[in-house]
Image: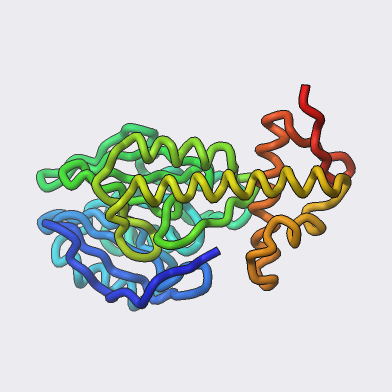
Length: 281
């Protein structure tokens, strides 16, 4: 599901007082690595310090060049938030975000000092950062809008050249599609993802993601119509024939998210772990 572009520079100045540092955790799922963003030069906010990698935590402090007052996280998956607690212990910074939802694959170490909800703001003399709740990839996923730049820092909600796994029960395809529409309505000038490069055509990127997910949903419905009473494992090769077989286990999770959305919409049902398409009224 990833198709990241060429290697990115490890450090970039993105705008006045906005910097990006790429964590040294490249992989099939993270692309070049997790993007850590720093806001401000007098008092610094750090977004998504990534996994606990000592060299990266040290580099964040070196690049900050000023007191780190706040640490924000987009969500509590293990490639985004674990270093937050350690960096806060070193710097005394306040942790902001939504605490983990006690589901599998979450970082249980992150506990926000300030629990954010949609529309909350972090205000300093140098910037205003607005929280935007975007559930779907994770129920506690937040994007952050840099008000002066009108850029949306999207975590894993929207990433460069790739789709993300929607992994139930915490991942929810219906919520994900709704959150994509919400992101589009913000009319931001650029998207700064958690992995990969800056996206300078937000509408094009968001429209592609929505179209891709709905096309996949139609494939799911067609597969159910052809072959009722199949398990998710049996359905994967029919719905994800364009995906490398090595990724089928991940694809099966997103397939389940599609099926659960169809079930919610009254289009499909599951009986004894086997899926059926329901007849239209």
